[in-house]
Amino acid sequence: MLQQTQVATAIPYYRRFIDRFPTLRALAQADLDAVLKLWEGLGYYARARNLHRACALVLTHHGGRVPGDWEPFRALPGVGDYIAAAVLSIAFERPFAVVDGNVKRVLARLFALPAPVNRPAAHKSFQAAADRLLDRRRPGDFNQALMELGALVCTPAAPQCPLCPLSRYCTAFKAGAIARYPRRRPSRPVPEVEIAVGVVFKQASVLITRRPEKGLLGGLWEFPGGKLREGESPAAACAREIKEEVGLAVRVAAPLAVVRHAYSHFRVRLHVFRCRYTGGRVRRNGPVEHRWVRLAALDRFAFPGANRKFMPLLTQDGEGQGAVPEEESTA
Image (tube, rainbow, N blue to C red; front, side, top):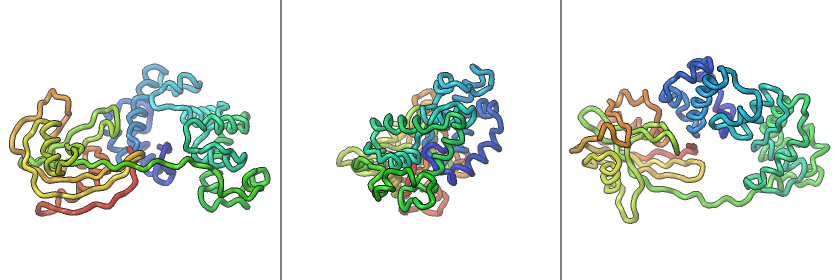
């Protein structure tokens, strides 16, 4: 949960998660829908899917015990070098140095490293510096201390250098150059994608579809829709996408909302419409998993944050129309 997520945000999710799945076996045997529902709102849903799969593999291939060696642990779904180093050092006292964003910032200032922290090719230089510093007798404590130092003292803005236990050794501090580190490569403009979404009503139920497990927002439920073509109106795109995606003909009624939502590398603007089913049938064995559900039952399903923004409008009287503010989020 702490990958790409602040501690304060993750704590309530963690507590609910542990209450619901107190053991590795409980999580491994849980339905993926239940796991995703508890994860709803944390973003980066591949983490939840990988954790679910990893628990199953630990149960079946490792006798229910998390492996304490690099190779078998690193081979689990969703485990990269950062997670492997963090878990193995903290839980098993294995001598692996952790390098995350906070650690990179400390190292960049401590050694006045010129490599941009947001350039993947520069990761090796930060890893090498962390490896040199690592206390191999207490690697777990060392890694946690360095991460905490970056989070609380060596902060991006207004670092508390007088309180820092490393200030006497810090190259950037002694040179009066703290503001010049860490260095970053200029980011590219973030593209925005225009998407039309339809809330299709059939009597008292609405249609929801499930995204494939692999890929962005995998395993989550959503309302059908897709990208606008060049020169196409949002309403026309809504009808076309629903026909192409689920095979239904619909009457596009009043606009419900315009939603802006940000992911890690792009933004979306959703044009959301109320629609009425007029014909066709979703093939039960087709490529799209779907359900017709009543509005009151929507809370039982895990939806992306962009869908959650406009869902309260569905229970309002009338056709509903409005705009929902943008908020940063992730996949």
